[in-house]
Length: 145
Image (cartoon, rainbow, N blue to C red; front, side, top):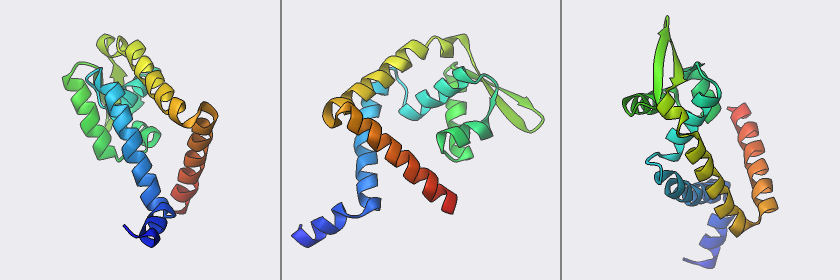
């Protein structure tokens, strides 16, 4: 790779954000994989435990995922006995089962382990700062769409 192309890639938000996402995703998959869950499944379950009866639409908004993706995740968690889906008219509401609620401690431990891993590398304050910057950037760019 030439110096010019390397500089071009390192100065591109698209490239650097995707590189970061792949790296942090790999770390998260390692931590949550110990529970037999993907990070997205675990975060969906955490929200369902925190907000019993949440609609799939609201879950999609909370997780910044397409409703079709959330629907697939919910169906997977239903099959595994972690959540129940109850329809009110056309709206599906998600409730954690006792089995799902029993996962909370382990999911929190995985989340904490992930936080500790990247904080050890980046520094705790730098990790928090990067998280705030990424969230602000996402909100601004999303508002423009």
